[in-house]
Length: 98
Image 1 (tube, rainbow, N blue to C red):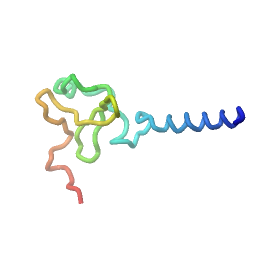
Image 2 (image 1 turned 60 degrees about the vertical axis):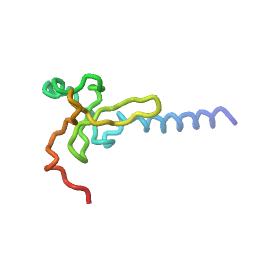
Image 3 (image 1 turned 120 degrees about the horizontal axis):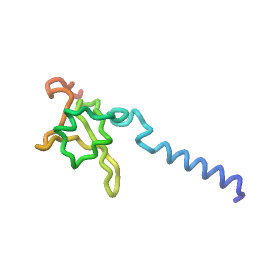
């Protein structure tokens, strides 16, 4: 394989990997992170969660945070110090799935 072809393949691979970066994907699970988090959220949120990567889940209006695990990165419900989810609207306000 010649050097020019190798360079093109390497550039294509790097471009595809960059597209996988979830922080560059504003539509993923509700869009960009909330920054800075409001003081009232900081006061009630369990500090064991990643409070630097929080956003609203458009499906139910609850806050989710980015959890980086050993195998995958996913979004989990942001919970208060009592373990309850923190939401922007009450369950009665959410639209049921059809």
